Length: 260
Image (cartoon, rainbow, N blue to C red; front, side, top):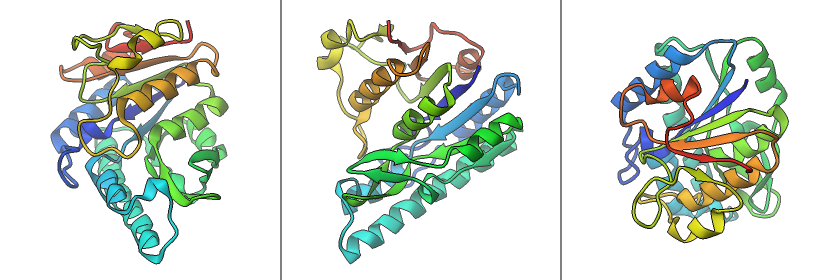
């Protein structure tokens, strides 16, 4: 039963700052993941770029395209910022005892007008088969139309999910789930009730060039319709033990997204 887990940029960084890493939160999250992980329940982890990649990407407008010499320098700067955070996450997960192996998406990803169309997944599959925990992250990517663009962790999950067929995706952020207009956590989102709650969705409170909560929910809802049996949970981890509980199968936490 393969699980994808995303550590949101809003969770492991302060997205209202610049390269503001939340080391204590990351260490606690890593410890809970390690506590719940077993090779019998394979796991792939991804993380957002938060106040590292997003701030630089906004400065250069990277998501909209990369064409000038200045924009290509920005493209490289975004990649560097994303790698800085990735190294910190990799070290924290390894220190917690996880057999984590990093995969840099930009090394093989290709987009067409913002959509990920190809990325090497064979080595990720091989890592999973050998009991390792692959780690991917939000990154830059070359784009046939735009020159270059931003590749979100959700887009990577979307691409890999169709090939690796996970049974669950856990998206961890600083909020307890998806909120309705009154600020209450919506327990379940399906294609049937999504039109009713769409108006309550809004973008990120911090700098986010990949669309915030609205884009996240729409992408994951579409994915549940394409991967049979997939369950997505959007949740926070403000209380100790929540990440471990979710990894062990607690479906009551946060907001669940399913095809029906």
